[in-house]
Figure 1 (cartoon, rainbow, N blue to C red):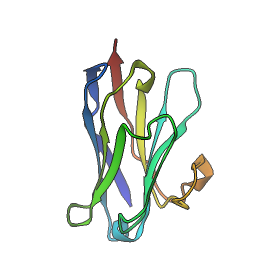
Figure 2: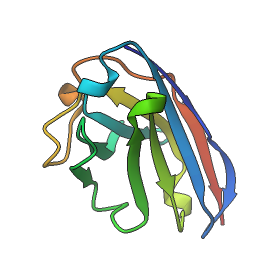
Figure 3: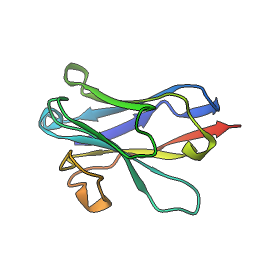
Length: 125
């Protein structure tokens, strides 16, 4: 599967942004999907994951209650709705395919297939 992330940009603290991850390939519907992020000078970290059916989701504590992951199987696209963003959310956001399990924080080793190219999110205070 190949992934194309988009939707990043500059947003004020407290605002909202929706990231998209468009996938090509017939295996998208069978994969759990995830979002990770990497801030300058920091390691890439887990943000959220969703099961292949969309029935299960899991979030990092830092974004729980503010971010929502979803997917549209018909459009082969996964989304990350970011609400009440904070300057600490500033990072390059990456989507990933075939992650799991979707019941605990994921590590980079939890990604078994592809990474998207990343989209920059900058939150101003």
